[in-house]
Length: 277
Image: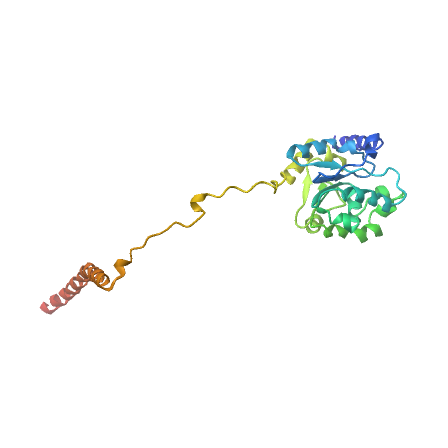
């Protein structure tokens, strides 16, 4: 059943890739989350993911990709131009091979990104690209071995995968993902961004956006704005008054020593009884 859903989602992603709206460049000036589509996945394929994150209070944008790029560098530069228009400390959610494109972003665009979240990105490559013109993404290719550690250049990197993603084992995700790994309920790379169970898991992982920093500070309480005046009676510290107070304290302490004398007499009584014997 899950495999059928995976094929269905993959077909929908491929179909939406050729919709006219996919070529529209995203306006990222007010966005704090940018979604990088995967291989041959259209912007419409991520509408459900975008709507879920918008309901949490995020401002989400889906980036556009080139349908027939002449080179890998052309695809990356096309993404970088869109990311450069976004505010600083933006979050990238890269799906599938979109995470591989994020690894080779130019430094200027990479500095805009504070948090990189990848969904089912094949960091070890995939056999699906072995007999294509994108052999640089083939399984255990030289390109993958050379660039997959570039994700550690981002301030916060969190790789999230499907539960049966064999190209990214749990042990490696714990080490490579800075101690944080997440496995989704429903398997399938394309199901990660469309199935309700997986979207709920992603919502819980992201939480809610931070409170805005441009709020007005609370008004100060005038009762605590200045120290209160405290009056001290220094007359009790005069020599004559001080001696009287000390003598009163000595009289109060005197009765405390009487029980000690009584206890001493009680201890001497057993000694007298021994003399009678």
